[in-house]
Length: 288
Length: 194
Image (cartoon, rainbow over all chains, first blue to last red; front, top):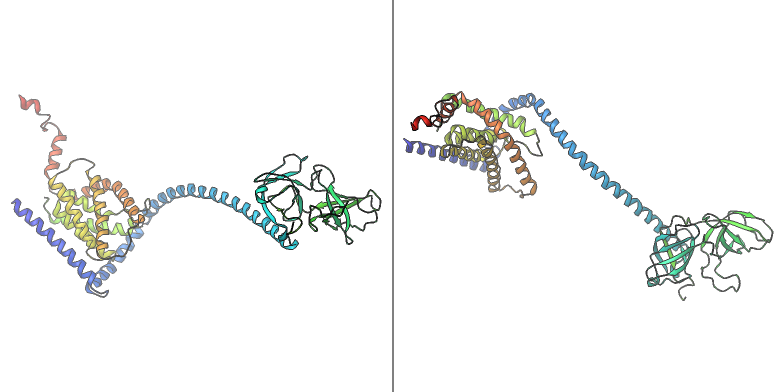
């Protein structure tokens, strides 16, 4: 009895396996318009309405499950989106910084081109420190004697002259700004290139410089550009500042036409927000 | 081995058809944890455990064939793999007769795994040009987890559906005797010793 049962079981199993393999082989081997494909398509066509009806009938169940699934997924997505938002915020901030850096550097190189400063050995440096007190208008840049920087080298940013190197270290240099009370820059202004000395109008005022020692009859008007003179006033020797670097624009003239007239100018460079600067390491040209 | 009465055959056929229709109309479109539950191996496993290897194998073959027809898949792939699943579950019942309440859960997981791996294997043997990616394995594992969770309730439903058509088997009789009191050999121990 047991043997008969086992034999029957094995026979059925073998038969079903054989059926499966025959089906598989026949189906796989025949073309799309073959008999098995046709039977399959016909059966599927007959069952389509059943499936459609079942699909409609079970839609609420699907929706219910879908709602649960969506809720769980949405919760997960909220966390993911929060993380992504934080990452993107950081990325945007970094990009903004890079974009600003790029703009400034572009302007810096534009100024190089406009003023033909390439021969003056410009070294681009990043501002790594800015004096926290208004009494010392100084900054520190990440270029030093290792890069050929020396004391007295003029420093510009993308807009204008901003100062000169006052201390040099191996990998950095201290720059005293034009707004520092110790700075004096030989300059010229107006159509007739009137000479004078530019210095800060007052300590801690980065937006007001004054041009002193001009001739009483100097023809300087409000709005005139003030640039570096290129020579020292005493002996007409070459100045540490090359000729023609922009400094600022005349804003007002006090005691006009007298020996004590003061020509006030607003510097082009905003020395309160400096990121990149260029140190002119050959201020007297390629042969210096 | 359970005798296949006409009533049982009818119920099995209805179960298989209903299972495949529900699977294609509802469960295939339900994404749970990134995977779809697959009722076919669970149904086949349940029938195999309840009715034995012959019924399980035949039911697996039928369900697989019907699923292949409905889903317009290569005929014979699902039937071959589900036949093995049903036969295996049935043989487990016949050879070991496991009685633990969590047996359907473990066998359901094994059936799902066997079906997933077997199906993939046959597909590869047929020359389906798909690389074994991590996504595929993840999908298989997710289906395994979902099916394992569904195994116990589905087994209970199938048992309830087939119970009326199944002849009273020895195991059920034995359990009923233990729970109705007085007939268990353990409770009769002192009496026997005397």
